[in-house]
Amino acid sequence: MQEVRKEARERMKGFCRVCKECDGRACAGEVPGMGGLGTAASFKSNVEALADYKLRMRTIHDVSEPDPSTKVLGYDLSIPVFAAPIGGVSFNMGGKVSEEDYIMSKVKACDANGIVGCTGDGVPPFISEAGFDAIKAVNGKAIPFIKPWEGDEFFEKIEKAAATGCTTFGIDIDAIGLITLAKMGRPVAPRGVERLKALIERIPGQVLLKGIMTEEDALAAVEAGAAGIVVSNHGGRVLDHTPGTAHVLPAIAEAVNGEIAVLVDGGIRTGVDVLKMIALGADAVMIGRPFSIATVGGLEEGASKYIQQLTGQLKSAMVLSGCESIADANSNMITDVLGQ
Ligand SMILES: Cc1cc2nc3c(=O)[nH]c(=O)nc-3n(C[C@H](O)[C@H](O)[C@H](O)COP(=O)(O)O)c2cc1C
Image (cartoon, protein in one colour):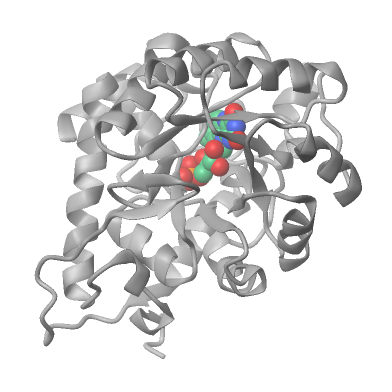
């Protein structure tokens, strides 16, 4: 991983510093780029919120071979991780790797290591097109995320996505806040629950809504017919000064009460972070920037190495918290900064 990160630092020069800690400080305001919007308070909050929680270390138990696998949204996962949708290599990551090579490598690495990759969308159209080709290459075992475009464009993209053989369709409804789209003259507008319901009914598969930060929106997503939500502030790229996702997750998971799948992203970097989010109520997590760095730095091998590193870290954290399986993870394993 050290070599992969060194290579990524070279290739992403001017766009991402590949910091020791990916916490939004060095790249504040760099959108386009890999940073958070404005002061990057939302990006930083994600990392800080996770750091507020600690794992209660347990050493007297019989868990020596924990099982980190799980099933979410019908996918059998070797670990409860999805690679978050991140696109736009040329204007976000420096363009030393092509959009096609980047997304193909990321999605294939996920498939080869028993997890699921997601693909992004935006202006220009080659971002989603490259994603669709990658999903076809893994026989549909990946999730395309489409922005909630107004009018025909949305369903034209859904139709193309359906042709990949995928079974889940993601919509990043928080794209209503993306200045990158607004700058390109293509802003997207919000939809109320009835319009969202009508949209979801026309989609030929299960729908995952990304960009939920409150219990109200989580319950509205259930009402609209979503199969799952991603608790996310888009990595701090749409609205400055939101809470960190780890802070809002427990209340959202409680409100949803197992009716649909709850995923979360934002600031998750290690297997310990993954276990914290599961213990806080998520069924699985999405990881964004670290996957992009590993893929730009080492293509399929780089992304594979990162997944293997996460797996080792997760298993080790499960042993040291006495957690035998993902289903066993719960809030008793967590303590806050004061040890309470
Ligand atoms: C450069 C960049 C591009 C992104 N593009 C998309 C996208 O096309 N669709 C989407 O749903 N989310 C997109 N995201 C948000 C990520 O999917 C994810 O929510 C976020 O990166 C998670 O935070 P993390 O990077 O701290 O793990 C993007 C994020 C970044 C940094």
